[in-house]
Structure formats: structure tokens, C-alpha cells
Length: 137
Image 1 (tube, one colour):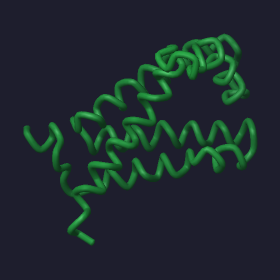
Image 2 (cartoon, rainbow, N blue to C red):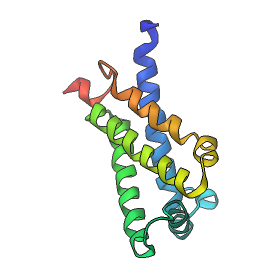
Image 3 (cartoon, rainbow, N blue to C red):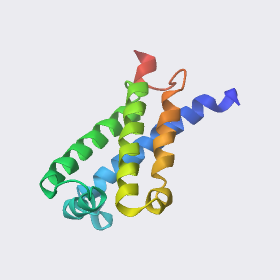
């Protein structure tokens, strides 16, 4: 099992990073016709955060986008990996809880948001991060 653990940690780091970078790319229109776009993202943010005042939604959307971009890049290059993984776990857990409150438990389960969150938590428990900036420093 230990034999493949370094590869598993690397692949998990890259998969989490890709999830964030893809989502941000979509809302910023970088996926072309496959993009959701910023306006659709704002509308979805409002639905997910149904408990928040409408005036807060743009701030929530911008904050989430900045956080996801930063965490996606940090995970990709493997810098401050443990801290980035913990932040990723907390951010996605908040998203899962907000989804659960607004839509019920089915949506966050169907979209594997809890899996994403707990995968990031698992990544934070790795003893070392091979093939990362952390390892080089």
C-alpha cells in the first residue's frame, strides 16, 4: 500500500486542483461554449446561499472565486499543501452545508461535494508531498 501512496497523494492533489481551476475557468468563460458564465454563477450562488441577503451574493461569489483560484494554484504547484488542503476541505464543506440547507441532502451527494471535501481533508494528513514545491523548499 505504501508503495503507491506518493502517487496517490500527487494525483489527489492534482485532481482537487483541477476541480477548482475548471470551475473557475467555466464561470470566467474560459471553456468557450462549455462555460457557465459569470451571470449564471451569480444566479447559482444566490440559490445555494438562499439564507444570505441578496446584497451579499456578489461578494460571496467573488470571494469564492478568489479562494478557489488561489487554492487551485497552491494545490497544483504543491505549495503550503497541508494548509491548502485544510482550507480546501473547509471551503467545500461550507459549500456542501449551504447546498444541503438550500436544496436538501441529495444535491451535495449527487455532486460529490462531501467526497471532494473529505478527499482534501485526507490530503492534509499525508506525511510528505512528493513532487511539490513544499518538497523542494
